[in-house]
Length: 203
Image (cartoon, rainbow, N blue to C red; front, side, top):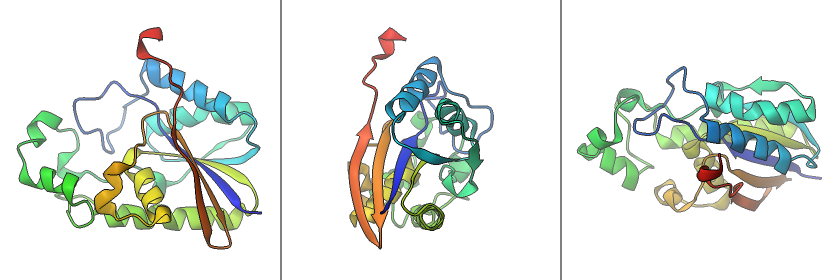
């Protein structure tokens, strides 16, 4: 049997007008906490045996309700963290819109280096290596990975055989679950971007 991986993007945050990157102290919003509880409910019958998370607070907080439900601890793995946004971290999106390199980053992800940051291909490499290690450890089992937008997109792009320059066509919303099955070097993306559908107005 293959390994089933549930790829979870962290829930919504209030820090929306700037690049959060690796900044500390950025927690889930009220809506994000609702999303985290929904994720736990959505995966309640998935027989998850292990939960792995990015070290950033918003990811760990998203993993917490699922961990409580499954009676598991959250295993922190640095390779699941957000892309290193370097000099762009903490800067406003409005400010960055005037930067040529920011625009290049959104049209040519595969080769645009973030100033003092990370190449997208480096993110993809660490994510794939992480998943391959987890699959060896959990052959035939189901595991949950809590990460971030670009890292999850890079992973889905790799297993779908899609160029990183086109991965913006993949939607990975906050509080979403995607499902990937891996067995004997055969990859099957079963679900992408499953969300609660709960409107913000109801929170």
